[in-house]
Image (cartoon, rainbow, N blue to C red; front, side, top):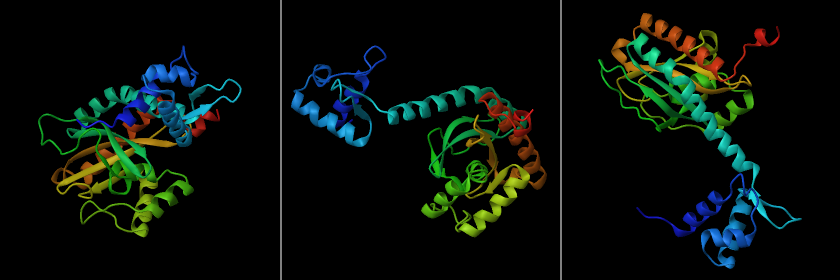
Amino acid sequence: MYVLSSVRNIAVILRTFRLEAPELSLADLSRAVNLPKSTVYKLVCTLLASGFLEKDNQTGKYRPSIRMFEMSQFILNRIDLVREATPFIKLLAKQSGETAHITYYENGEVIWLLKVENPFFVQLYSRVGRRAPAAATASGKAILAHLDEQELQQVLAQGWKTLTPKTAANDDKLLQELERIRTLGYAMQIEEVDIGVASVGAPIFDHQRCPVAAISIAGPVGRFSPDAIKNYGRLAKETAFAVSERIGYLPARRRNG
């Protein structure tokens, strides 16, 4: 495996900061990386310019920035989400007889975080870590339907890659579909991601009532009859609501007493 020494050294610098050593001097970092101060200074300047470190002008020491904290929170949130959702996803796969997923939303895309297959049926080409345009997937469209207007417009402005001939290719078609999703409470896609595969998805909301992830049920398109889609939609909504509650979501009426 090819490793860039400069990137490796930056990683070592970032790992040097700990709870017991939240602020470090240039000399501290030089010893940790075992490089001359002049070299470490250039690396630190890069991290400062990128917003990953900040300098205390009184002590002259460096510390991780708020951006690092935000990134760590993003990672921790995903870990908590998977842990809380796993038993629900396993039950969903059993109830539906299909493959169940949980996906996370990020900048117009969804990322597969968890996949539970029904071992008695056809296995799907989907893997943890896979990314796809939110506008093409059932889980992604379930999330897009509940984004605020500014976020949704950003997604529309940047566009998305069509994965199959059936992927929604224009704003008007997608916006009409998002309206239906808000009414139904779940989204669907038929061969928009992979030919021969259909899925149904419902959004997961966090404690701020923001859509951060989604539940989906996927399987061969031949098993997604209108009645099956309604049943899967109901199961997806129930599961997504249960997971939402586990990560702090409260419906508006419950908040208002």
